[in-house]
Amino acid sequence: MLTTGDHIYITHNIKLACALLTIGHKLKDEGSCSIEEYGKTTQNFVFNDSGGSVSADAKKWLGGLEAMNLEEPMAYLWAYAHNRDRLLDTIKQSIPMVRVTYGSKVLLYPKNATQEQKKRIMSKL
Image 1 (cartoon, rainbow, N blue to C red):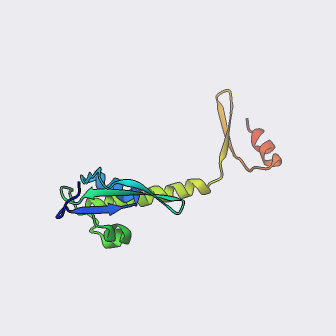
Image 2: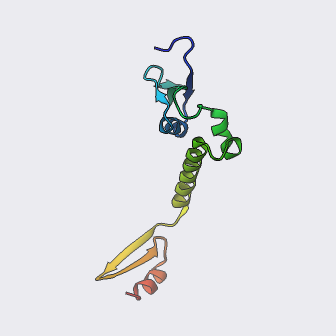
Image 3: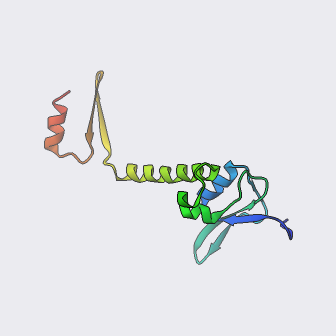
């Protein structure tokens, strides 16, 4: 149970919650929950803000690398989460490729290729 004097930190940001777990903060069972309000569900994570290698500082997390010492663990975790999101954005925007295998030969062509382009590409097999 949470008591007066507990050093706690509450967030609904799952990336920050994962970062805090990674650097040693303990998730408190009491208080961590899903909250439904106006048809929307949010996750709240409650951490003990003592015992981790760095303090749970949301202002730094929200401020990005500019708000952090670049050598602290939170900066590396923030960069990881940011780069993961950018990579996923790139993948989502890319045109899917179709793989065609003929014997030991493999050919890739864009999924949105025209029939003319497919015919020209397939002639390479």
